[in-house]
Image 1 (tube, rainbow, N blue to C red):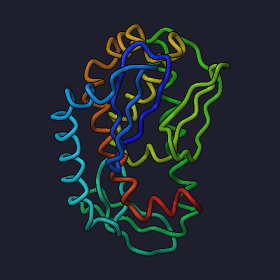
Image 2 (cartoon, rainbow, N blue to C red; image 1 turned 180 degrees about the horizontal axis):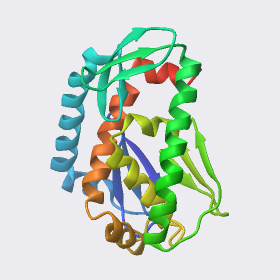
Image 3 (cartoon, one colour; image 1 turned 180 degrees about the vertical axis):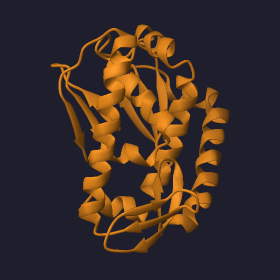
Length: 214
């Protein structure tokens, strides 16, 4: 368990997809007592992670796309059979370019529409390979999205876009920020939990790991 002391108002516990526990608390705060009170919740989350790990153990040779696993076959050109969940995959570099293009097309379209709902403007859109973040928003209003978002269902990608657009109004994760998000994505809490599960699925997927390094 990692304990981080920061000048935060309230303590919180973060459990990473691999099961690592991080406690962030104010200086002098009784961390041991806090953890003891939250032990049932911690055990529940660790059990969920353990169960999910077992589910993805036999899917290392499959590709996670749009929330579904695809059986891979080699070929000269990329083809996707969404009915039988079969994907013909060329070189990893070509697959990366295709994923990047598809995500840019989707994000560009949805950000233009959703920004009107949130009533904000934004700068440029970037598609990157990021190891620790799904997306980010710069001080200039530029939006960066992780190409790994293509592994998620479309509804979760929409949540991430709304999340980043909401940061144009509130830079931190205050209560005010989450109220803005909730206004445009009422089920954001469920989305956050599902994204945590997909983070573990991606971390355990050999093909995505190679893709993010190529």
